Length: 195
Image (cartoon, rainbow, N blue to C red):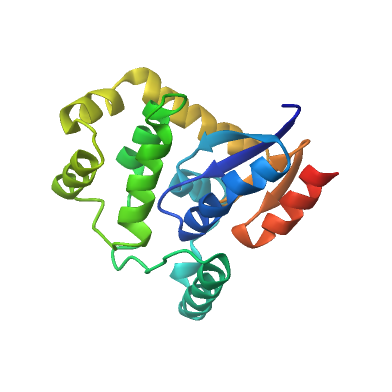
């Protein structure tokens, strides 16, 4: 495949979840490859001086309404997580650890569903272990994988690369070097893939 879309995301971002629900079908329509780029959104915010929309009450109220509208348009389940914002470091190390493996999409589906459909507290190690076990993962193996220095370094490097390339939030997409921010810009991403 000559076409590629880079997807910089954090599972703790509800907009990243909504984008994830649409990205595979979009890529298939345009015979494009998705380059999965897990990042730590909190570290991006800190590096660029940005904050979550949830930190501003008026923005938070609008964001919730907007997310629900898009979930209805996409026809996907969405229930705002009462534990938001969450520290996703362990979860994103998991994304990084399973990157390029046959279990990658299974892991993403389990985590995204737990966060944005079932509203679970995914900062709780016990809850994470239950979710992963139900999805067919070995929780002990998961802890071993996310403790590996290569995994930690890869996630850190990808986050730093995102900042260096102008990313200030998630999800962010790159097609042919051009950045698009936000799941509400998926039509722009699709146009870029079409061209």
